[in-house]
Image (cartoon, rainbow, N blue to C red; front, side, top):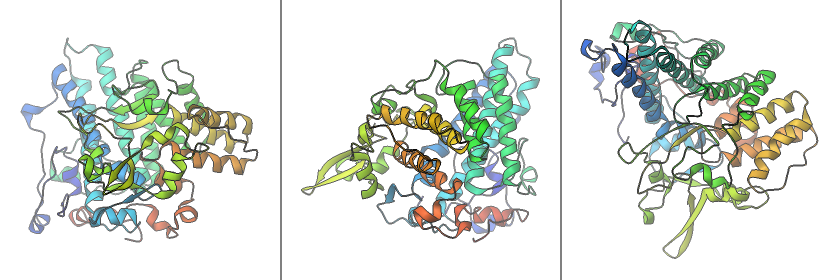
Length: 451
């Protein structure tokens, strides 16, 4: 990632599994990175299953590094402990349109969208006795869920984005697609989640989409849209399921073999399909690069028995040159490299419902939800009594509970608190820039103001 990676918007849609470096001249006559060859088409049970797994793989690609970084590094829990400009820009809230991480994330996300589009376009026509109706519905539901997840993330990162809902197989398919509004983008997320929930099974699989995952993401969507009663209702469905519970101790959520009962949806890795996120957190003495370092304020919060409780397990220490160094320990499987990416957890559903209830003046119920998360962490229940105090307590709880996950920046943006808490007063900087090379490749795309 030390060199500039050029990706065209329509090329991003084509589902390439690797990033390509393109010379400037290629911008004049762009060609697709990958087309779906006839002999690779989705035509039977085996290819449908493989194509669906491929969509998970593309979602996994942007959740392994780029998306979590864009979620935690602009916030106030983590600092970049290095010199690479693409990370420093994010840390300092001074993004540019040619930032490599922004380009990579955008590209990977539209690759995932295109993978889902291919499944949704081909699967209904498949007539294979080895693909029973129930499994066909499940695969369709998974594709709808994954497309919803990607467009939700695109929306909260960039605002309204181009809504590409059919497969992109040539450069003509991908050009001329104008941006939709944020409301339209979220409407598409809702449409996909509605379809997903109707098609997915009611099982407790935690690393593939099921009904509860669609409901949990829908609760989050309604929270972002400030639709409080709907957020409360969908979070309640997940919380009320016997398939999910808050686990103790807190560290159990991120302890092998993973897939704890608290996990609603996580992305699994293995030694052969490695997650290298630990490498960015561990000090060099432990074989890592120590790119991301918890800031002193976050260390204090996590280590304080009154605020962190058992969540102090997110931190670890080692001695370097005679001095103690504290580092993030959420991703810790340095030998196995199989830490998952955490996407939806039951703790978030409690805090979504707490916030939604507080916004509706259901203060007693909101406090109970907040305290369910606090008690699991081994800390005293909150005694907030006013709606304002309760909302601040929920915000602070989310900061600690999801300290190194992809949440803090987006929480402060969606609540309008990024200026007060982080000092990012230019609200144009609350959205990420559209990658420069995509703007060059497709003149119908419009940049976010301020870039």
